[in-house]
Image (tube, rainbow, N blue to C red):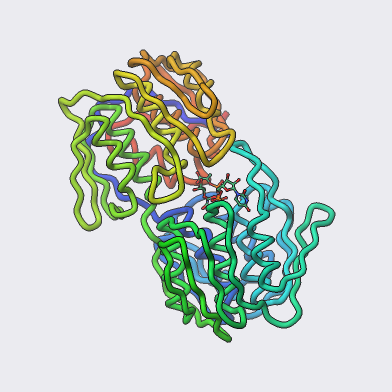
Length: 420
Ligand SMILES: CC(=O)N[C@H]1[C@@H](OP(=O)(O)OP(=O)(O)OC[C@H]2O[C@@H](n3ccc(=O)[nH]c3=O)[C@H](O)[C@@H]2O)O[C@H](CO)[C@@H](O)[C@@H]1O
Ligand SMILES: C=C(OP(=O)(O)O)C(=O)O
């Protein structure tokens, strides 16, 4: 097991290159299951979740022709299995995204039920009911989703009563090879959905409306391979910007996608930062400025992302004034709060809100990461805390941040990774 040891940082300064988005890359890699032709994905971040996805695809018989330097070459012309096993699915919930493509292309799929995780129960009912509407027969037995279809899936009008990123992705992929037209209503509008639709379109899929809440997919008989570069990671970008803001620094994120971060940049400006953007860069300047707590409420895109909630709780701890951060997507996404309290943060949890009153003098302490973004919030707290902060269980962090300590150290932070 490894941990990070973080000492109080000077203001972060310099340039940081943003990696490809984990949450775009995961569904994108699954598109290989929809075609017999070779697929090349570029700008794939080097992350634990990507390795898990590649292992999962290998288990299905996907040929991994190359996986190095942020490039992944896959070919699914000779699958040997349609089963995603518990061992892999339990380490990464996004494994559920093999369900739609396998069912559409192979006519059957067995996927271990992902189960809940630290941030909430996270059911998959919308994935299953949508596929049933398209003609799939689904049973859940012995912890596995067993799905099959006679012939091809059929296009359907599918209304989702909650906005779900994963269900939208699974159903959109399945619909590309269905017979007829599928309409996804109340679809998620996240940039990662738009990225997936663009990749599928490059493979010959007929999709309109991605990025709106109404996506139409006209099924085609077959898809070709792809050569696709993953969208920059908006959550990694936001995490570095918050780190720069709390340390009073000035950084430029390059290879970024500013258009995916409107709600986050708006909050950073409200927090007192000066923010400038270009086509593919964002610069945040907090030098000589006063950090102010902000009110944040998470909601589906284009509103404020739940994956940036924990980082803003830390920002509010370091800032003056009253800040209220309200979580509306996941029922248990405040596991970072007790850990921040152990570092001296003055926060109270009131229903689904974390309320901070005035700047806390954070002090280094051993803390434990419980999920990916909670870990990020503790790393940021470590940058402003007096003394040493030891962040344990960083395998969560390694699921979603590529070389985080190296990137932060290049901006002036002092973070060591040690084995324990
Ligand atoms: C790999 C990936 O892209 N992960 C992201 C994705 O997760 P994921 O796709 O799992 O999240 P969803 O958008 O599906 O979840 C949103 C809400 O809908 C609920 N729900 C979802 C599906 C379903 O069938 N039934 C149901 O009730 C969930 O419990 C949750 O309360 O979107 C989340 C919300 O932006 C992000 O925090 C995750 O980082
Ligand atoms: C919750 C997240 O990821 P996942 O859906 O893979 O658990 C995240 O990226 O913050």
